[in-house]
Every structure is written in structure tokens, then in C-alpha cells.
Length: 174
Image (cartoon, rainbow, N blue to C red; front, side, top):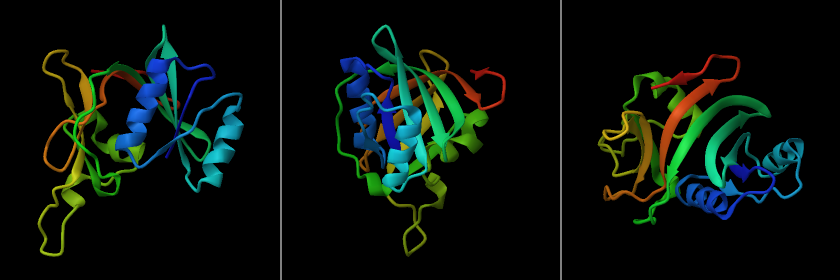
């Protein structure tokens, strides 16, 4: 996946994108004056068909648009917790667990990460894989995306989902 920003991102948005690059099998590219078409060409050059564009409001990341083969797939309205990162992610050993029914089928498509129950070793046991967890936040009662290393330690970033909209669909929210 290629991750980029809107045209003139704030420091917080650039930091968030670098945090995503640290935990996902993705590469963050400064957009500069690139058009979206140029971003898609860059993704193709990098041999990926997925692009995430992070937009901001008042200097904070507030929306992520995910594209597949140059077509908008889904938009996520977000709030980001900028706690300091901890732990170390192994991006090649990442799986996903989604505990939010409305996002279960979409989560593996959005991030192109295999589900946790599909990762097994030669003996048929689950790996201690790094985990992208989507669950309902207890404090804010909305979906929350968190990243955990193989030891179960939260690594950041923490992303709260406000709404999501599939291309061509109505808004959805928790």
C-alpha cells in the first residue's frame, strides 16, 4: 500500500502517516505537487494497487480515502490518538481481527491483511502474529483501530472511526 497526504499536510498528519508506515506493510510518500493521477502512477511503479490518502482538518488527520486500482473503495472519517509509539511491529507477520460486525467483511479488504484465524504454522497452531485489532471503544462507543506487536503490547497509532462510506453507498457509523 502507498500512503500519502493531502497537498500541504501539517506536521501531525505527516507524523500519523509515518506511524502507519511503521505498522503496516506500506510505504509513505510525500505528495508535494503530485496529482492523484501521479500518486496512482507512483503506486503502480511501486508494484502496489492500493493507495491511502490522508486528509486533515485544522491540522489534524480526519479522513482516509482508500483506493484500489485508482478507484475509490472506502472513506473513513477518523480521529487519531497521538500517544507515543511503543513496541516493535514485524510488518511481514501482521494479521487482522475485527470485532465490529459492520466492518468484518470490509476490514481485510481495506488493509489487505489476512484474518487472524487464517494464520497458522506447520503444526496448525496460530502464530504470535502482530495484530491490527478493530473493536468497539469502551469510552467512546465507536470503532477503534489499534496495533499490537507479537507480545501483545499496543504500538500505536490508535484510530477512532467516526463514519465510513463505501464508494457509492450512504454513510455508516457506529
